[in-house]
Length: 224
Image 1 (cartoon, helix red, strand yellow):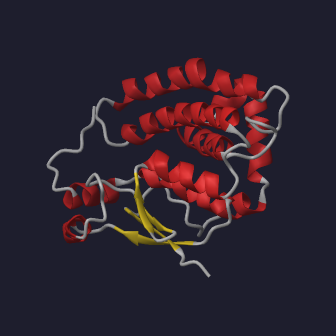
Image 2 (cartoon, one colour; image 1 turned 60 degrees about the vertical axis):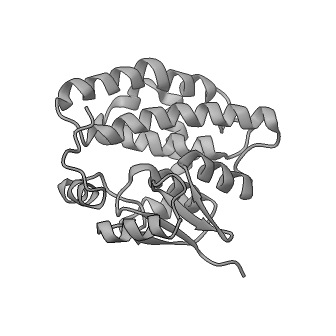
């Protein structure tokens, strides 16, 4: 029996949240080690656990994986959430990376000043650049690529839920995407993940910002 997957990150969404989502959909149990002190981070560095001195880091199959995309691709490939051939995989990657770009804007927003203008920019880009792509792709198919659940679908659900936290009515003009969100939310593993008390993390608050600053020895978290 393989050892349980262990996630090393903050008790927060950040770049680890997509990994939590994907493991949940693959029905893989995982434990989490939360970074709360600088000493924990320095120990990971001293142990050689962080290839590029960054988290997230995931212990899986005897390896210590870093870099979010690499981790996601490994999990997706292992659990058959990554298409049937190279052409499907490149489509999954394109959809996935577009969603990661959009989600990163939302993540960064919590740590910036001048938030009204930046929030307006996120809304405009979501409605004009990103959501139309997924709306068109879902005009007939149940899933984005190859008629089968993939990494891209999991991230689209995650992203639309993040968007609705900021802009509750944003999917009103994207009925295919809203219907997709509803279907995905009925998958048993996802339905459980969306319930209170699951390993899904809330939106970041001042406490987590303070923890991040202390762990990385930062004096300013303004990324704007």
